[in-house]
Amino acid sequence: MKKARLGAFGAALLVSAAMVASTSITFAQSPAAPEGPGAPEKTTLKIVQGSDPDFTQVALTKAIETLNAQGITTEFASVVDTDTATRSVIAGQQDIVVNSLYFGINANQQGIPLRTFLADIQAVDYLLVSIPSVTDIMTLQGGTVGINKPGDLGATVADQCLKFANVDVTQVDYVQVGGTSARMSALLAGQIMAAPAHAAEALNAQKQGALNILADCGEIIGTFLQTGASTTQEWLDANPNLAQHFTDAYIDALRWAATDKEAYIELSKVVVPDLDDEIRDTTYDLLISQNVFAVDGGLTPESIQKLVDIGLDAAAITEPVSTEWYTMANVDSYLARRGAFGQ
Image (tube, rainbow, N blue to C red):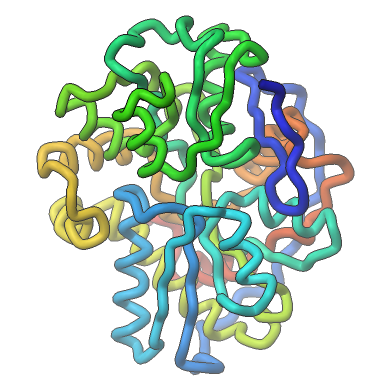
């Protein structure tokens, strides 16, 4: 099956294992950091996540708890269809979306002022898993791999893992199944041969003897701004203090995630209640070893440049790449007041 080019917000993110030469871009400059956010412009906040709830993003739940304790009533929804999640923010139905950062780039390429202002996950947490009879990744050449849709994050990760293993991806049949939960169900039913899955779900299935793990995609891809928080420029202009309160609460939560294993695991039982406790422990250690949590907000010239390089290499984005799709002002404000992690 040939890779499909997507429309407004889902350009194909087919990342090759070998990076092309970096294309230099000019980075946006942030204004001087304020002393701190004033009173929020409103006391309600609607957040939508473009995925199933998963173990990797427990910190988002912690941030929501903090905001609620501050008197900001926060509504949260998970939407597996990442396009739908993004469009709900553009339409003003939600305030902030936590999603792949390529959605913000592609929106701006089409004149829609969507702004990424924070990264939360800065490394890939996916494993490539397969049915028990598939123990050699080369078997997938001519086989079926489940994805959400062409160009989605899971499809990008699967493609990268397969290319790294010298699998001819033009000979792989990518089957649109859905999010992580749907892909796992399809695997267990024998409807597909392999699929990318978040680490916790993959390790859980492996322990139960249901699936094999073929590749650690995080090791293959390395540092990568997997997801982040975005909103419209209109919302940012109308709610600068609320946006900063969210940024402060979320980066605090990411730092908590990176340092308090016991509390993280305990809260994960609310977010993903069906995981084996041993798997929670193993997955947390894996996330820490791969430096998954963006404890300084993730957005740096280096990380943005790598994101752009991958996108250009994959034809996920096209030149020229503007700097309008992101702002570092909120992260810069946080770091100016609270310092870099560990300092």
